[in-house]
Length: 129
Image (cartoon, rainbow, N blue to C red; front, side, top):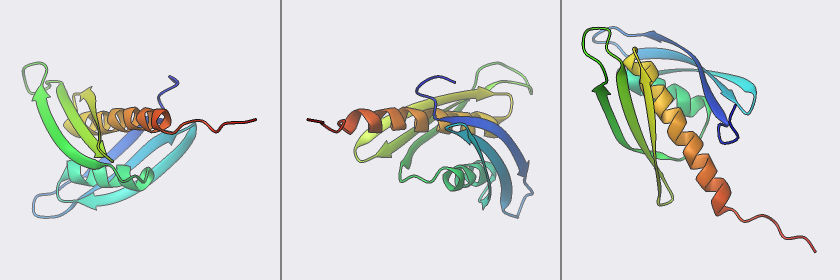
């Protein structure tokens, strides 16, 4: 694990059916501890992001969500960008995977890790005499 990687994607299980809410079970590793969360949402990405916010509570606002294909064909790699905003700080995260929802979660986790680094830099260390 890199020093700036407090959160790591573990696994995702998804159930989605037209006309019904999607549900996700998400597993993350947060500072070495496995955290799992279940959530529903208006579509698979919304459910996945709700599960992520449940597994790692935060106040960051989703400012941008963008998906594109890296390769061609039905098995194309999805490349996702997520922009988060918190207290005037903006961070972008990227993710890629053959599964678009996994790519989205990877991008969100990447952005959260960047945001945590910015938080650490913004909080000065306590002075000692």
